[in-house]
Image (cartoon, rainbow, N blue to C red):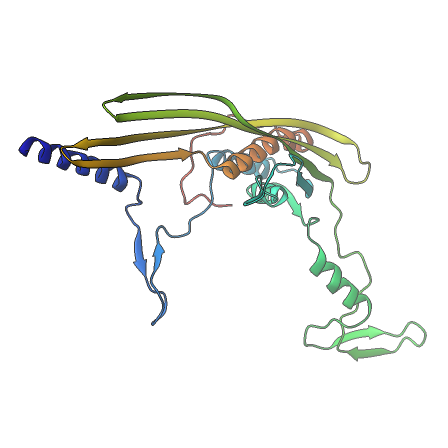
Length: 297
């Protein structure tokens, strides 16, 4: 009997340890406002950096020190062409590829000039107000009557065109591959209804980008990048009688490299290949180690 009690205790301790191992150490419950139900909170928001952030910042410094006129780059649509969807989760791949590209190119500023072309709704509306003499800034502005030459003070801002600067190049493309389980393996061992198992699997995501001249529409460079993603699962199961008591215990953990982080890294790697084509500044041996959270854009 004492032996069984010790055995039960060891099992409980092992399962508790396994459960605690997968729970974040900073998890807490906190009511954000008086009278509200406490929420589960963990880490604070941080900068979304990747192992390629340092290299992007380094290349931005190279461009800045080149002392040449920065090329003007915009980003068009970088769509999800995989067609992979789930009834419960919707699209399986991020629809924000263009936003990721803009963020990555932001690390190169002021070595390049970065122009908005992806979402111009606000700018288009304000330019329309401006053209219709409806936009002001709270002050008075001087205008000249083209027929009489008289000057007038008006509340609307005069607009003579040409305020939107042209881009030299734009980047477009799409996420073109999402391949599940390109390789997997595992093992399972059971003795007297006590078993342990482990599994490892690999998938990948791929994308194709190109950089195009804004006026000529000449394609200056293309690139296809893929990123492999690995995950694993481990578990322990117990289903057996100890004396007259049936024990059914399961414990396990699973982890996977984030899919959308892999997409972001693939976009960053693609930009590091095609942007030097139009800047005429080669990518030198920048440090590719993981950056600190203090890295600036």
